[in-house]
Image (tube, rainbow, N blue to C red; front, side, top):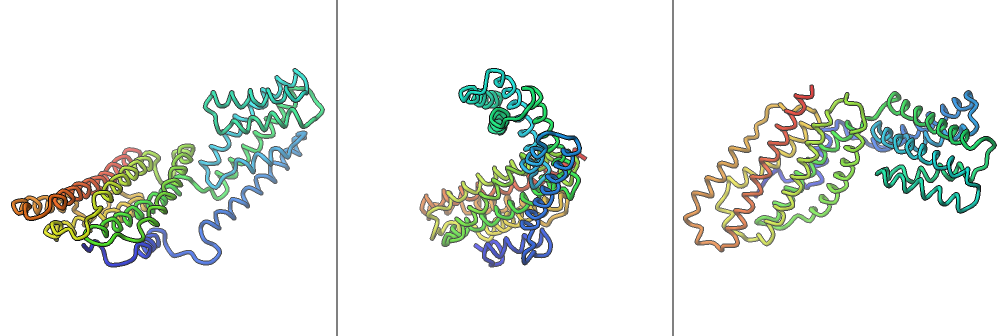
Length: 375
């Protein structure tokens, strides 16, 4: 069954990536390295600005503002907002417990109880990411001795951290900002391309030899799905303006998980299918539907990349599904000539192909409607 011009999966995905992303990046300045360099420069700028402002304000330990800026400034705006929120909440809770417990003395047990109380409070409030930051704040307040009242020191610590957060947010949002939703849009486009490659590799095992590249593709897809999930969480913290709506991105991510489950089901369905003669009688309709689905993954990926879901297409998945169903109906009277396992396997494959085609169509249409409503 030929579902595309014969390329290896790596060649196909690479050419698709280049088509979506523009000219191929070579040498030192790949996107990842440029992003690392830009983040380092922005972090240094934020840290230096914090220290300068703290010096002007005569804060006792102004360098803690620089430390906070370095901690919270991430590679994109959404992640910076999330880290800033966790840092500020942890600092406020830690400062409160550090101030209260400091009135009980300076012993080791008092310090340990303060750390436990601060971290447990964060956990009970569902603030897992702030828990350790609260413990760090308690430690600084109770173990690093400074002159001043038990209330002034926590107040200074909060001000210093707040300064670092504000500066980091400003630098992240205003100086060559990198939006999480922009990264997620491109990541989802690549995800759909990889799912298309998984689909092709799985069907190579139907009436043929399983693709030796399938484990590698599945591994790459798993890494990409995890990264896209993290970007989606970060995108929820960004302002609503941008090149892609959050609702549309969320829909595509959810459709991706359903498509991934359907691909796994298809992989199970084609097991032990080598040499099936019944499936050969479903050609060319079966191969045509498989080809259309494979192209459908690429078409949806292109729609995501361009963030335009009403582009005309030559894909008629509903017609291909109907043609395959008609073919299966026409050869049903001769089914008794074939082993029951082959017939059941062919019907299972047909069912999963139909589901994949419907999901691809729905992912484009539903996302397009969500984007149109949000405009």
